[in-house]
Image (cartoon, rainbow, N blue to C red; front, side, top):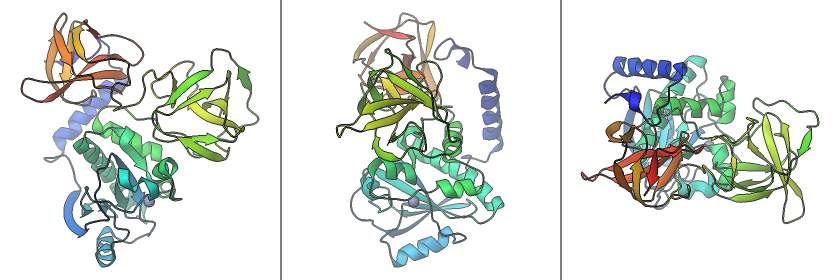
Length: 390
Ligand SMILES: [Zn+2]
């Protein structure tokens, strides 16, 4: 089975082809398992109770030069703030210090939803560079092991914005010290996962933005309406700018009624609403792409909403008929997952009602005769149809 009859009959851009070739070369050149970091069990604590996590949080220790190994010693003496994993200064080792089903106190109110890793704070560029590439691989492996995509990957700062109870901003400052951003990290993890899909990051700081002069606003009667949030944390601000004070935040699936008004500032389209308390509030809807974009933070009426949100696509369980010449069957909801079979035009498949939007496609799920979970792209988030109900 060749990749040419993939999802849509869509040509891969040359850049993607190049990236895939590079990834294949890297995979062949790499030793078995393709990972360089060593995963070492060195449990120091049973945590603070039971945990069933659904997100992964990246920290840095804020303890420049202190090794991960020294953190395992520290936590074995006092496990109050032990975190599940800690990565060595040069990325060579990840110590697994608290089992992932045990609660750690690492992100305030989000503790009950999250697994954490601390990156030991490297003090030179050579170590940082090695740690960066190993951290990307580790995070990718960790997400994949849980069946998660980059929408489940948060910085401590994002987790604090989302759930509160913490004022930490790591690892943003640490990354910035070596010329990297949180967005760079997330993109690198997506590339490592092979999906090319980077879950949108809510604009959270002035990184990359410039202070705008007073932005020009536009009254547009087609702009307003109910929008749904597609990111884990979206800041609500007092002004339509990354420099507006953050006064609240929205999470996945929450809705907001925007006015018939928008403006463009700091590279984002900002919408406006009035809070219950009577204040004018602003949120970033997405990049000014001129139309709906799968990476938007807010989407109207729930179209193409987020990832791993069952039934968010308005589709239902039942028999679906393939309406394209050939359609790949994959082991996961994304083009990064392996092709395990194919369907052809006119064939039917019974989907179980779970639909996930990922990488611009809407994926439907079924269980194969062999008992495995399988996924097909039933269409694109922007409306193309590959498999039709009935
Ligand atoms: Zn932290």
